[in-house]
Structures are given as structure tokens and as C-alpha cells.
Length: 445
Ligand SMILES: *Cc1c(COP(=O)(O)O)cnc(C)c1O
Image (cartoon, rainbow, N blue to C red; front, top):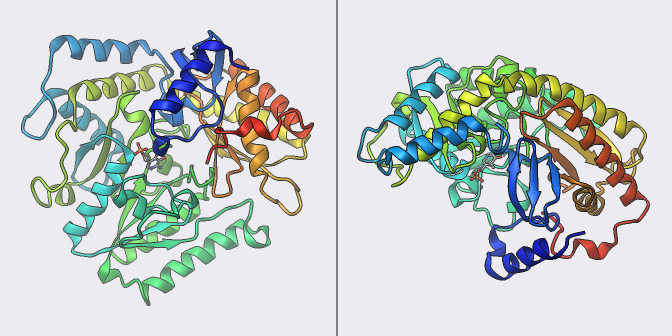
């Protein structure tokens, strides 16, 4: 599929960049991008249903983001917030406090990645409450540092993640719920939580519960609003902090500013990352002052709150607001989901289409009745889709869920084009047109 320049970059990347930080799905060497498209080294345009793992919410090359970054570079600015009061992070913090509108007087902590933010969150809530346990979920992905991996419950990390003070609950999966009764599964998980709090997870030693409003790397699992409200009620009853990890789904992707808003819950702490820096590395915790102020200098990074990254974030928030990207995510997302369902209905490999806004999942199975995960086929679909002009990755505890997270500026025509290609890729894989050997070095995770 690829001609010389992509092949050349892929070979040099193989020789020089650590495998430890790669998940590769197909020979991919983007050199430029605009809107919802990336252009590879051979000049091919690919429609991007990944947004670079949900980073490019504003679309690539956004004029507001670019102008904000250039202005900050021109001004020349100081490293970060550790030892100075500088304007871009202050303005961004004020903006995030306004957007999240948390119920208690709050502040903002800045980091570089979702991982460092979740790790800092764990340290801060333990220190502030004097309690050690944090309740998380199977299938959760909270990051790749030791502290954040310990909070996670993803199969991809099972081989090495240390399980620190995290206590895990099952996460609802409506497609695979026992007896196909999603509501009953959710109720039983809430019951289990109550039981454990009354037994071996005493609230007196439980600091917080950390949840993704839509579990994304776990396989695009969106629990019902009632489930999130149930978690909130139990947290309130037992005086446990409720923290939401919005690193992937926050900032407009669900069709609302934040993923928790659909359920009407009021979290105590919010973690942001990925799209926050609009392409530059930036993460944040928004949470109660009494927690984020618990002790000076116990969770700091030299370049955190970097003014160029914060300027990019402000440009990104402006773009999301003025270009009506939250509404677009809701409208185009609904149309995209409907098109995906129509595409899936006629095919034997497509077991389920789920999610909301522009965070959608398509689960592939070998048998619609047994739901046997079609993991190899899923990897081949990603490989084939790229050959046909669509970039899409997969996620899931069984490596069989296509993750559809395009830039929020996606148009209806682009949504149509993407679904068309996906349908073709699935048909090509079903017909055996993608050889096993194609996945050499591109088998994903
Ligand atoms: C990606 C992700 C993280 C980790 O973010 P990094 O920037 O990779 O450190 C944490 N939580 C969720 C929900 C994520 O999707």
C-alpha cells in the first residue's frame, strides 16, 4: 500500500524509536494534517477517525490554536507555574473552573499527561483524607506511570502494573451483561460496592472512587446515567470523594462539555488530558482547594503549566466554543452512529455499535450468538481501512472494538465516507483479502 517515503519512515522508526512506547496498527507516517484529514509521507489523504487517540478535538491545523501558540512564542515566556505567577496557566485555570463548575471551592493542578494527573490525584486525595484505598474498575485505563497504571484495570497492563492501593469493581458491559440484562448487571455492581464498603473496604480507609464516564480503552463501554448516579449516591453516603477521568471523553467529545454531564452527577474531582493541550502535552486536575492545597510542593513538575501549552489549550477551548464543536459532536455523532448501525446490520462480523457523540465503538465478533471476540479480524480491519483511506484504531479488553473518535469538526459527508470505507474494509477481511502476514509488526495491542 505504501510507496517509498512511508516505508522509509516506518523502517527508520523501527530502528530508532522504542517499542516500549508503541501500539502500531498499520504503516502510518503522517507528515501534515488539516481538519479531519491527515496527509502521509507519500501524499495520501486519510480521513482520521482516531484524532490521534482523541487529542485533535478541534481538528488539525485549527487557526485559533495556531494563532494562540504563535502569539505566546512571540511574547517569549517563562517555564511553568512552580515558582512564578504567569498569565496563560492562570487564565486557563480560571476558564477550567468556570467550565467544570464544581460544587465546592476548587482549584486547578497542571501536569503533562493523563498518567501524571491520575497519579497526582491518587497522592493528593490520600494525603488530604488520610485514607489509602481508591476504588477503580476492571477495564479502566488511567495511565502508564506506576501510580496511574496501579489505578487501571486493563488487560494490556496486567503483566506489569503493580496494584498499589486500588480496589477494583467490575464495569458494566451492556453487550455482554449476564442474561443480556444491562440494568440488572449495573444494579448488582452497585450492590457489590455497598457490600464491600460494609466489609473489607471500610469507608474509613477509602479516599476516592475514580471512574471513566465512558470506559474507552476498555472497549467504549457507556454505563447508564442511573449507574453513575448510583455511584455518586454511594460515595456521598459514605463520604468518599468522586473523581471522574475525562482524559479521553472530556472537552466536547460526548456532545456535552464533559462526559459526566449526561447523568447529572456532580463529581468532586475531574481529570483532563489528551485534547486539553490541543496537540501539546498538558493535563489538569480540577478539584477542591482543600485537596489540591493539602501540602506545598508534593506533586510538581518543572515545565507543568507551560505557557505555550496553556496558550494552545486556551486557543483550543476558544475553537470548541466558537466553532460550536460540542453541538457538532452531538449532531454528527448521532448521524455517524445511525450510519454505523445500518452498516453493521448487514454484516456477520459486527456485533455491536455503541457510545455517544463522537466517541463510538464497533465490537467485532466471529459469531453473533456466542459473541466470540474477533480480535485478529479487528486488527485486519484497521490495517485494511488504512489502505482504503481511513485511519481507525481498536481498543477493548478483548482487542476487538474499533474506536471511533474523529476530530469534533467532522462533517456529515466525512462521516458517510468513513462508514463506507469501514464497511468495505470489513467485507474485505471477511472475504480473506487481508493476509495474516500483513499484521507483522502491526497487530495493535
Ligand atoms: C489516555 C488516557 C489516560 C492517560 O493519558 P496519557 O496522556 O497517555 O498519560 C488516562 N485516562 C484515560 C481515560 C485515557 O484515555
